Image (cartoon, rainbow, N blue to C red; front, side):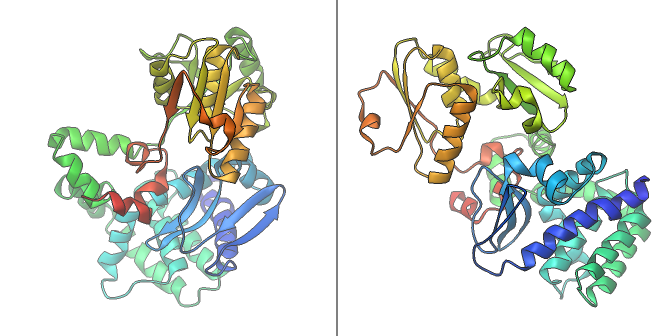
Length: 398
């Protein structure tokens, strides 16, 4: 399949399929299960922070799936997308969420008195993202296949609207790229697609140059890291297995991370299909979260409480730090997240008592307590793309 057809026949067909299903959900919770993948659809609600958004809009997310399932398993098993095409679908999904504010501004520039229907707006974002943020999809392919997706979704006259919008921008592509570039310094919130109240707050603490650097970094794809699980694996043996499994990695080092504990993953097959992952030899974990455990400095034989512990990265690292020689109680109020916490502890061989805060085991006394309290997510917007558009984030506005 050449790159021109890839834009529409694979990626947009997959996304159109997702859009079709979202239209069936109505305005209340609905559920659909296929190939062991659970979909939860909601038009007016709030995503769990560990879910992965597929589409979002001003009124809240349209569709979300469990992050552990979305990236590869969903696209391979449910949408039946070849491995060569999955990366483009992910880029389109994540990119349109990340740059939503700027994309909507481009739409509004051409339609100041008319907001297109929701599904048409989503497709407009898709087409514009390909035109101005991707360089591997030719303009005519982005336009044609976006219009075809509208027809496939039975959007009627909206295909004409999308055709006019996108073709108009292709005729002014260079001028529009310069406008978008100038917008980043002239109006950083709009130019970098971030909530204005948050950018204004950062601007009070950072110089203009620092703000530009930070916003640019925040809009780059997050890097995946793997933390070696010493309870089950030795680093040297894991590296050998990774090479056989096709996992490409880099050594990484931070002051608070022991040597050869966390690796930067570059390219790899779907991780949850690899024997090394299923056997619990490593855990996908950002190195910043290791710092909390390093500061806690758990010692063998201690009794430790981890509050709000799901999904279990820090909990299982504490168990690894103790070499399972101690007592760890991990609490989580949400039943679904608590099940996920238990699953991760079991997979990694971490000796942990999973509980709720009211259980007798969680009453103490304890030698140390780790509290990773629910927060605004403003520090992890790079990884949790939907958090910047969550209605709950407005509560943190000064």
